[in-house]
Image (tube, rainbow, N blue to C red; front, side, top):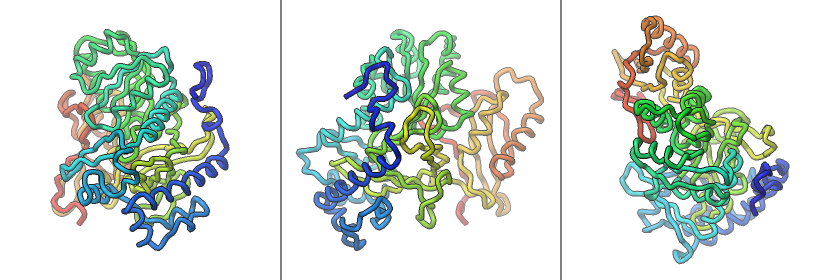
Length: 444
């Protein structure tokens, strides 16, 4: 049952329990969940048997490491082999009431099914997360995410559940969305970091000052690492005169699985729904708390399609240090990039987010950037394209040199810098494409 407006937590006892209590709850849930997966899913029954593990092998949470991994390709392949939902599904189809679907490189959408209880519990978590970010029944909330099979679409129901007036805006054209925000005096908005930036710039071109003329004071962003990069978050906040809260989710589980509270010191995980591992992507052994590793997730409650030890490909770091808000859940400290977005340049691992943190801290730059890689005489060459601001009257060579030095200091990679006029780089309506890799043999 939801708490009253003056309370700080949606589920106080759960959100503030000790780490020992979190671990006990997760172990109890995991034992039941693995049993449900084994008994209900032909895939998991075969996978566990092939690995030589049984349900009795799980005595502690660390014992989960005995069980096999799962990845996106396997989910997609099993769906194709056993249409329409695949044999990871652990309930009869009559119990499935909703599916989202994500596009993939094969062009075959990958479905994520939900039972009625799965869906209800997901939406309750979204309400809990919105509440932790300061959304209240007095707010007018605009949901500017795709509703076309996208798992982020139904998250708007979390805002409705806590009592906020909710505007199902979807992917309206920017000018139309700005008109809606203005007409209904929306106080909160959810979109991607790139689109929040783009929408703010569009407003300025239309003669609208987002901070002065609009009522939006909370921006929830997801889909890209930018919301957890302080330099990016602060630039968007300055543009809108609003607080920015980063959310993290993935289509294979449910909408947003972790999000910032009002303290904005990392993203609180839905630990009663998802067990988190952070592993070295090479050795697949756990990394120390605070170190970067690949995020591996296991559902604890999702009955329609359990997800066991799912390798997300996201490179993250986490902490169990107490948050000032009083919540005790594990916090995501940053999504530093993806394994498939990671660049190896002159032997150095480089993520676009590492460059973003540099580009967006300089007020002489618009904040838009692109990484262009090519190979010259068998050597990698990285060029960072960035735009100077409108009306910049400083020395472009000085700015170029400053940015080059800052990039070298922050990333360890020597890069060329190309300064472009404002508006040169393409603006993203949703997720931005930051890499143009022209090398013919990238990994050689």
